[in-house]
Length: 343
Image (cartoon, helix red, strand yellow):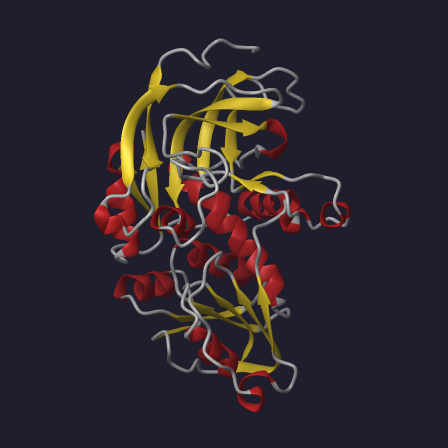
């Protein structure tokens, strides 16, 4: 290694010991050796790690186990502590760096070659296939590490690294026309960032959500309207994004679309979708699009936007030692915006 911190000493790390409801305490906190960065990897000292709903799906078993006893967390802001052998890239020890969800793609399949690496069948993900940021240190392949914009604290940056990036991809998939009407269903960590990006493009943002705090946050951020999650927005929607992992809301959102409108489903997990009626929900060229992870170019473009437009980020800090409580609070809808673990 180019530096000697990796592999010396121990750290705190949380692991999913038995996936199941967070009320049953599926996470376990341990002391364990600091990992060694492999060839082409960075060892990163974690300064902040966002708490994403995908972490909840991994912990509760909604997503299949890819790595037993994995350490969750894929919204990592940190400092490069050591370089593995053969690191190629523009990172040095001491640099601030971001670790996001996408960790590896093959680079050779048809999807990778056409610029759709998010659809690579050999893709791997931080906090699912490899240990993530619910720890004091984590590793990342240098080719998937991200340079971070200035002007934000570590805590503010963390939610940008998944909530922001996947929200940006969902916004692109929703194909909002310039000056169009966008509906957002669910208003948490990702949605409150996506709404701001959409507003910079001139969209009128209508928010449908259930929580009083989430509604108040949407109003503070300048939403054109805010109403209940099943209420009809005040105008037909050119586009909509479903952030809530609730399949029952798909027909609700489809019925709110204008002719030719598009619904993008942003989550990695969704409960079952009820039967759709062709004339009522789909006719007149209304369509549904899923969102699957993101590409590195999505990450770079979104972080460029975040550097150009100062986003307001609603964060709720938790000590790393309380990661299990942060996930329980997320499951219980006890905060708007995004929870962030701090060492």
